[in-house]
Image (cartoon, rainbow, N blue to C red):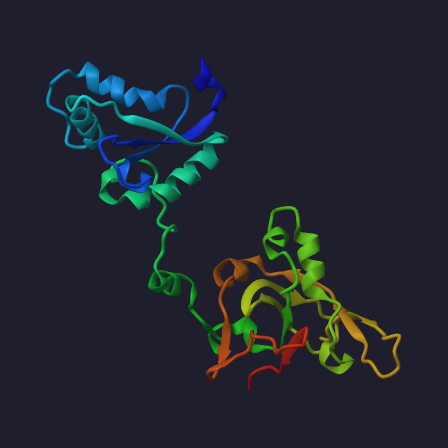
Length: 261
């Protein structure tokens, strides 16, 4: 059958009695395989005139359409998808229908967020003093030019480490004191590394001298990823006394701050 060629798909049921825009005619969004998109009409007919369950609101609408002498419109929104992709698209579209789709689908609370909800979820600045690890000598480094989504994927740990640990334009004196390196993008935490120390408690780093006499050298650090901190702090900014430390000034690749006293 033709429907077997669709693979997983997202479909819409529309009321042909409405002459308005498509969004005014659609009353149900669903995810399906095979003949599922046509089964609602068949199910309604099989029930004849039996009372419908309150939760089967779509069947009630289909019955109204049939009694008017029309047939429900079945629209394939997208097809040839994986089950997960179809699930995700369904979750995006369902909120557009409001209550008409309220008992169906797999809604996602992280979709269609208001500005206040976004701020509540993500705009939670960190006070430096509240994170003991950040109270040491800290270096914020810019990952603005990096594809951080790709870097954070499984299997890309080496690339993330390389992007975060250097090379950075920082004096050798300060480099020897760095305790913590935080990779940030647009002021928000992406990665966190703890530097490796020598027996004398000096930070290990490779000094890369500049080929230009007037330019400073750069430092490449050894470090271990602090995934335990990343999981809780990623996507947040760091402040100290109302100053945003994690926002790197224009033209600079990194910013260093001495340990808190």
